Length: 494
Image (cartoon, rainbow, N blue to C red; front, top):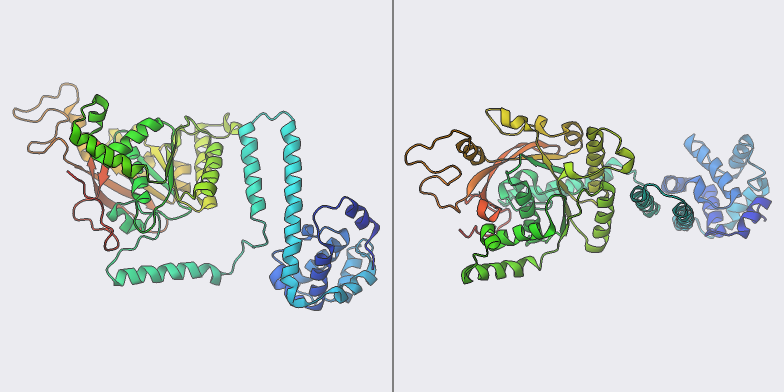
């Protein structure tokens, strides 16, 4: 038995490969063609290192694709048709392969070895090409590094597991989830299977934010988008059933501003008091308690201004690997930048690329990604100022890519705006513009509507939550009960 001259020359500069495993796979197939059902979707012709073996496996694949019988004689015939018999080592070499198989029972193991060696060669080729390009002039360093990360991720997923599964396999997780939700319903619980928002009425509709989903949280300025997102991050990180680590990319506010918001909300101390230093001992005690709670949470902040979407994706991959983050928040989408290759395109095309990449990130990391978004000014010109899908800026791509779109609306905000219009005169005895209604404390909560305008996997609708403006804190309404017994939402503390 001998390989062709070409094979010998290739073996001199031997890259990772296992000739014995390659021969064993081919010999096993010739003895038991049924093995192709398990390895046909795993091994490609290129996974074989020796040219003779690539030729033989190509002939085997063509016979299998044509649903023809496979044996030594038929493979030799196919090789002649393909004019590959000589580079395959000749009919004698094909005949010898069957005799070289220790046992057909280990065919899948031999195939795994062949695949692993092929992956290692791919890593070497990838690293060599990357080093060569890096030594040359790279105009778009950020884009180049992101492309490397994507190629590396693709290599990591070439371990021999096919992405194609039977419908039966795909249905199993859906059946398990349905059974779990059914049992929860029978017992009077409202199970949250995703990352909880902490707002019970909202979680009842969504069952929590689901892995791989892109959620758009949109509102006009002043409605509390950032506060709502921060509250959800904290609620998820404090969930008693299993804390979820999260990260927020803040393109508008500094990390100190975000931290102060979180601190005041957790401590139930007005932000104005912290800014002015109006902190008597009772407030300091609350702040110390809030600080002690927050520092234990696995939450991360990145305040890079105008961060390119490719850079954000790289950071998320690293955080997923090192910190096992389970939720990503972007504040906000329109402040992100697309790749340098898209800088000369329209803003709508750039937003389309950013939106598409955020959805890709959610699927790749298998986590929910919540992207905050601004609304067009068209809302202000309507009598009913509740947002619509058409109010999303560059709404086409965002609406298409999003799995869930949520709007925030506070009627009291617009009532205050009316009172602040030029020429407005308060009626005798009426509250000053922006002041709370008569008989209501200045720290009393107002109602915010959370409008689910799109829900790819469920129903749409509206739920109400409370907004405590002095603390930039959202909380559940008193009658909204938590999902499982014993997981009560922390009291508003007012």
